[in-house]
Structure formats: structure tokens, C-alpha cells
Length: 169
Image (cartoon, rainbow, N blue to C red):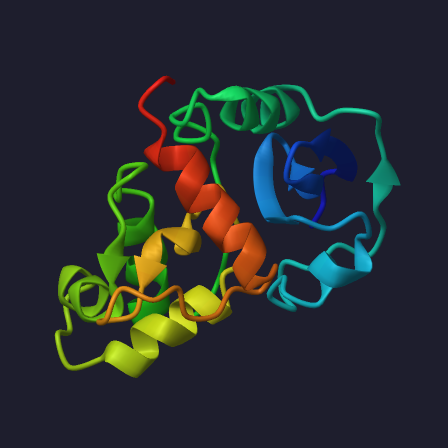
């Protein structure tokens, strides 16, 4: 990447949340206090050679704070850059259309991504998603309604879904 790449960590009620961005575009993010957890999930062709720490990341940090404070759509306009094959690219775009409080199953997710039989590929898209929160893979559940896995832990997934289902926000 030719532009400077920055990272910052925000304390949230769910735990520390770190984002890596360049030019206001999120490359990776998640509920962690360390960039090492995020660097490994950035596609090798997008992985920055150098990261510059910041106390905040402008609109990215603002969206993180607003989301955790209850504005569940604050993350929707933040650009994200991930790279993979066609199905995963489409699948990640689809996740950004799932509204807060409207969890879908992996089967529904595969259908929405254009390949109804690609349930395992849909699950893989969640597992390989580098930009957690901004690409809300936590909104995908197993067919039986159970949570399934989540890179940042099932307890965080549960807290996110509970946060998004609140009716007082």
C-alpha cells in the first residue's frame, strides 16, 4: 500500500476494538487490543509494510464509538477493502446489506451471495472476514439458530447480537 496505514484501539463496553485503515478505508478490525491479531487476516497484497499508531482514526473511530453507543448504522458508510475470489468478495458485500437485528442463517447467506449450495463457502467468508463489525459476519447464525463460531469469540458475538436487538436504541 502506498498511502500511510494507521491503527488505533478504542475501548468499548464489549472490549478493546482495534482498526487498521488507510485513506479512511478499513483493512482489518476486531475486538482485540493488538494489531498482530489483525495483520494475519489482511490479504498479503493489501498487507501494509509499516503501521503508524494513532489515538484515533477520524470517521472510522467515530463510527466505532457511535455503533457501540447505539447508532447501529454508523458503520454502514465506512469503506472496507478486502481481497479474495469472486464468491468471497460478493459474500462480504452481501453481509453489509444485512440490517442490525436481522440475523440470517448460513444457508440464507449462501443464497444471498448467489450460490445456494455454497453453505461452507459462506461460512468460510465469515471466517476469512478481516473487517469485523464493518462487514458484520456476527449476523450469521447456524440453521438451528445457534451462534456458531466467531473469530473474536462466541461471547462477543452474543453481546453484539443482543446490542443490536435492543429496542431502546
